[in-house]
Length: 582
Image (cartoon, rainbow, N blue to C red; front, side, top):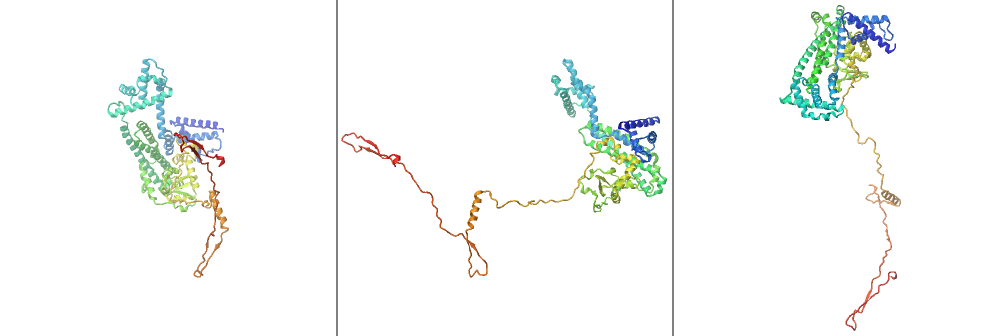
């Protein structure tokens, strides 16, 4: 059958089941109907073959089975599935809650923002109207007071005029649409900060709620309510667990009671306990975040509403097992809490030496031990498979088994050893049990084994939840001084003249003679030897000395001795020879 045709057939079946339930006075969401259809088809006891096309009789049988299960108001299994569907459709992460809240605010402000950014005001009256719209936008976006209260409007207008006077509207109108929107958000934050400061100084803050006081009152009240519900649910889970343990030890009691109803009641209260524990940490986070008071107020109202709407899904098991019946069944039985069960075997640990091919993790050897994603929500896989569906919390201190990149805990060491002998066998048993009890798929987080039933809120996180263990151990390292043998050639010489000197030295050694001398005193004592270079007379001759000279000047002056006359007349005669004549 083509995919489009198969999808059309499934939609028709879901619609027909919804109409049948409505005819009996029960309005059932399509999501719940779709989940029930898949659960009925998966149950092998119903005889549906997923590999072949459904016939008309198969469709009629499927519709009848689904309608009967959906109208069985006294079935704890149905309550558990309804609880799972409701929580899945209404609960998301904190970021998605706040993102949706902000999206709603943006959609409400879109019309006001569009009027401001698209305005083409020119005259005075139009500019005054535009300024009033900006004041209204600032109040609506900040959420600090109503834009219809004249006192709040006056205060917000005064704060806005201090940073954005009306004379700046001309510049504002010349901006692009995106720049206008950005400036409106900035003005909102500035005006909000001014009003909060004025409120703290006692000079304003009209219409601003005392959000810290509101949260300080609301958070403890809500967490106290959740804690009380969690305590009641856990007590019921402990009692059902004790009764089922008693039935497992006394097979005769299983003939008188309905063990499967006890198990379904246990699954119901355990699922509610898990959901309440999911909600509770968010309240703890709320008390630590004082900077986003408005967001926290929205969150707390949503989570409180979720908690209130979980209560109606806990009524079915009380009809089958009222307090009087529980007291009789608990006669002679000690009700143990999960903490008590873990403390009983806190010292029992798996001996790693007994398993050569399996890996075990312990708190002292794994850094992120508390963050590992444990299979079956931390319940003991061996106990669940061998005791017909009994849920007992696993004890991580015994050791966490890593098998095919998945992690399993056990309530006793014997259970751990038994499971480790043949893990695939017990995993298959649990898978088959989940097919018969559809609520186990979400309770034990078996969505990857039944991919068609993965809930929407977890579909995006399936690939992100795998956490690799970070193991710890004592190790030491030592770095050698030289990892490789040295490659330095000591005889290498880069200087050419040094090489020549060594070559001459070696050449001279060929002409040397070794002499030895032995005396009577040194006879029979030791051999002495010495090596000398023979002395020789060596002379060197330099180049011939040479010299050169220039002519010596010779000048003769005649007539200095005087003559017959009184006046002396001298005659200068140059007798210096020419250069080429010397």
